[in-house]
Image: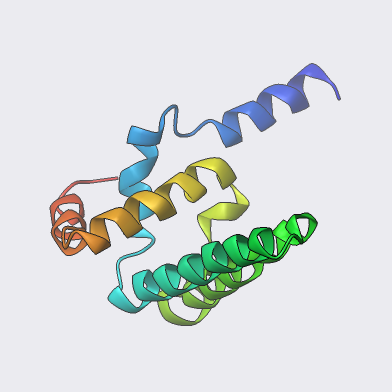
Length: 122
């Protein structure tokens, strides 16, 4: 990889320098309640499957826990939100965003967060 290609790749992937900078973008990509609910269902099912697999001693199948989580999330993005999942460009921050979003949903604060951040310019 030459230096120009390397710097171009770094520039593309470093639009957000921190999770705090990424969070408003993440929220904008999850603006519809149905998208958020599908993320919650998929993530909950994925975590439950992971716990089950560990409990029955089949921990090596842990990767199956990602299927319901990402399956529901991607369906939500493609069919409900009509956008491309941020997972493709920001996998770690998207994963962190999912759990922050779910925590806010479970505490009844996510709609308020969407409203607050929708007033900001990305």
